[in-house]
Amino acid sequence: MPRQSRACRAWRFTHSDDEPTRGNLDLKAAPLPDSVKWTSDWREVVTDPAIDAVDNCLPTHLHKPVALAALENGKHVLREKPMALNTSEFDELMAVAANAGKTFMIAQVLRFRYPYIYALDFIRAAGIDNIVSCTLQRSTGYPQWSNWLANSDCSGGAILDSLSHDLDQALLWFGPPDAVSAVSVGDVDTAEATLLYGNRNVIVTSGWLTPEARFSESFRIETVDSTRSGDGRHHGSSPHAVSLVS
Image 1 (cartoon, one colour):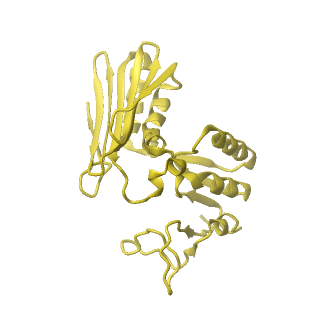
Image 2 (cartoon, rainbow, N blue to C red):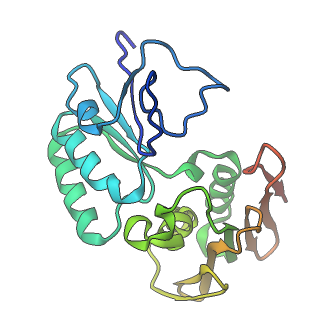
Image 3 (cartoon, rainbow, N blue to C red):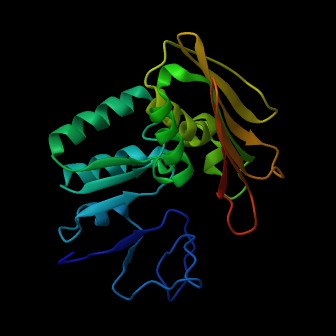
């Protein structure tokens, strides 16, 4: 890139007399360059003419106002999931993004992880009509690291925060379903969604369990003569490692 401008906006404040607000970034592990400009006001970032793109990593209820302001100020926007708290926010964002002429992308990370890319390739090679069953699962302990996640008005709860990962994969793999049903399957904040595609069901289970529960994710895809599965659990410093089984 011919030119770079970087800025950090902190949402969890830890003020001191001699340092700017820096949120929960781990500066001991990887100190950031002196060229990084710190600010406690996200408006300074989205209105800075030297900045070309904004990665919106703020809590979910701040996704919409920051993304709208960034797009209206001519920035490309990478937006962490979920895209919005409701459909009206979604419609408003899509309309502004269409008129802005800038790249607007939701960071659905599973689309870029090898096991899930492999799964999509397997489905395409086998043919959707030959898929007998498909299940996707994701769970973790009730989040303790921030209070805003427990407020459904701010986070949308586990359905938007966690289930959205695997629902995105199901829609990417199979397209829009004919019908959807869902039930709670846990004691805290969970759901099991059944996506109906003709005679085939795709099951997506996700949610927050008791606080001590470890992170877990998996998928299993079956055809009439073969199976592909991925299984990922919390292993030390690599909580999102997924092993593939043919």
